[in-house]
Image (cartoon, rainbow, N blue to C red; front, side, top):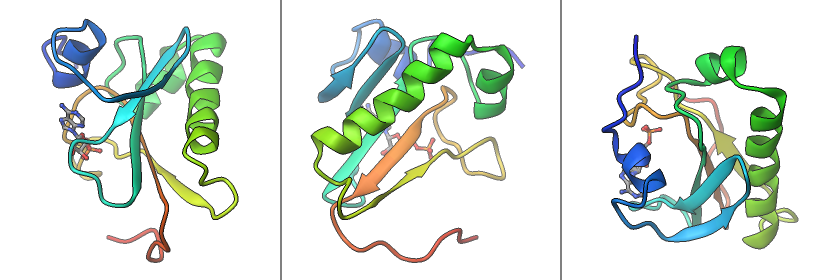
Length: 119
Ligand code: AMP
């Protein structure tokens, strides 16, 4: 499986498509989901060309992985959902219903969420 550099998040990373940026660091970019499921719904993506979480975990550098996870925490802090709590979700592949083939974490919060995981 090869990375599709025409996917929408790759295009956002290249600045070809706008996004509502929330946070960025050397290794990650965070922006609001275009179809939010809760008051806070932010996507956190690594800058590198990784399609899935397992590909990123296996091939990404320690700095890239740390930058991505730290970006998630920074987003939660900036969105003021750390106290109330939130969910960080990564959908992977076909059975995981991953729609965009660039690894991304959903940071969802700002209201009481339902129980998870759900099928
Ligand atoms: P997933 O099913 O985990 O691949 O989720 C993909 C997410 O990307 C969905 O929640 C979409 O609403 C979101 N999305 C798709 N296109 C954009 C975009 N241009 N800007 C922000 N979010 C987007």
